[in-house]
Length: 254
Image (cartoon, rainbow, N blue to C red; front, top):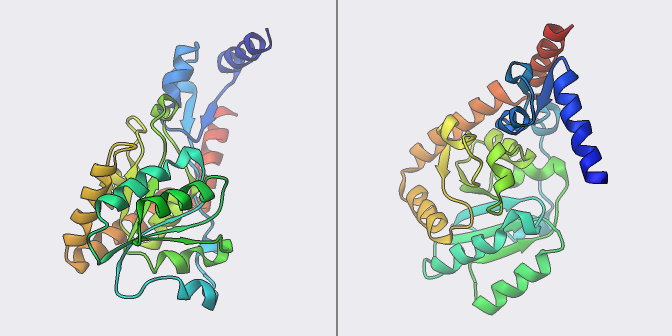
């Protein structure tokens, strides 16, 4: 009964609201199926604060020392949780473990971290480095040490309506190419920005292939790819831009 009541509230809100806003681009499909006029819908995604990213702090010496020198680094920053499907990234690392030039760096904490560390030990993965969480102000400095940024999520039907993870916009702003391993329906931000490679969710072979594809590119091409992501982030996801978009939606409804 409680679930039915919540569904009634949701449906009533769609019918009676002047505008309906979501940070999931494809959520309109679900809302329309619940009786909403699609003309009411507006997409305002997540983004980033220029104040947070424009003055990055240096890494602590202990943290910096854990990053390998002279390697092609595929990096991840954020929560190490079940939804992030990082066991798939470890499987990709296993496929590439014989390449001495490639290292996978996972920065962050979460309840899956001990599980992932154990898996890495059991697989004998010398090409995977785990680093403890760092302050938000140091994230951009860390990203500059990566050659490629990885973001992934579990293969879940829910994500067909789109996703809006904050780390994606940090990645884009960093100017690093992105491997995007999320089945997010028609929402394909890395393809839209032409700033990396999109692969299916939970597909280690596709991730490994994307790593090799990006590694094989001349450095200038990777920089150009990252620059496109940086420009896309500024144009589409900076908080000031998003605030203007939100105000436009509100003003249209008033």
